[in-house]
Image (cartoon, rainbow, N blue to C red):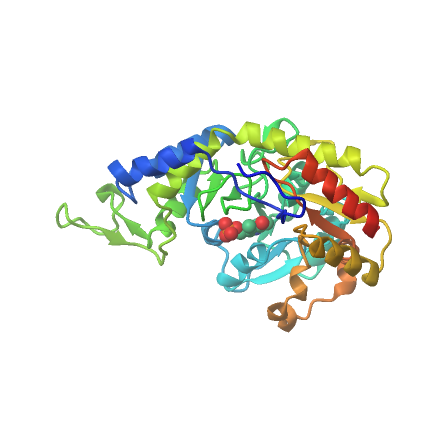
Length: 391
Ligand SMILES: *Cc1c(COP(=O)(O)O)cnc(C)c1O
């Protein structure tokens, strides 16, 4: 390792790849099928076991997993899907791919998570207008689970399905259960993009305890094709046959990626522990600055995907100066996220930002500062010094 220069750029997130990971990938390249082999199944079994779910279906991205999840739950034209405005656009786009309408539920700016009291009000109104959502997609921002038990209870009253967008949250726990166990949802989705907790380069997965959902995810991942003659609609004319039974996609993940994922998954506990440690170190060294940290509800063990600080003084100019000041000092920062409805593509849906005051407050105060395995105390101290000057 080269020694860190004083002003080296520190990104806000960075994947870690070990020699063991490289070994696992080269092993596939040398010996195994590159795709549609056994590594994918092995990876899926390892995730199922890790998160205590009956089934896992791995695909080429979380975006694909979200899309297939919506389809598996029957989302189509005339349906409505709700998600959080403070998320990556994929949480909303998956509904649009299915021809459904998207709407948002405001967040609590202190946690960045879906505000259950606002959800209750919105559901009550929607019930009166006959415009209830078919699916709600709570987003576990920064690796903290939303209050799933309460959302689940509401799903029984208002009859909607739940897809957890846990792109940030593999390794996290909610109350007594692992995120991904689907104790309070139909499906949970994970991302393995390099910026997330563990990576496969690109990749994602959906977990579920529902056999039918698992089967339909598997089918849709590969063109809607079925190869098992016992599941054919028509009679098989020979052992060469296959049937396309629905309109699916090629959303498959490769064995090369699955091997990397399997190897990374072995370090999951260590990674989340380090992330928690780094966040706590920040809490300690930044405690006298005029900032707060995104709150982690006490029922959570967070995977700490991001270190999100919130400026106490709310002013556009102040936010801009702190954000750009960190960048000018070679500190990678990011806003996770600008409300989805503020993207030009979403303008046509005419969302009323008055409805999302939590998201608006959050947007004007939240900054993700660097946090990733291998971040050094010295680097964290440098970030402190720069923040101290800027604030
Ligand atoms: C990264 C991310 C996604 C999309 O993940 P990909 O694997 O890149 O498709 C979806 N939702 C959230 C909240 C994310 O952070």
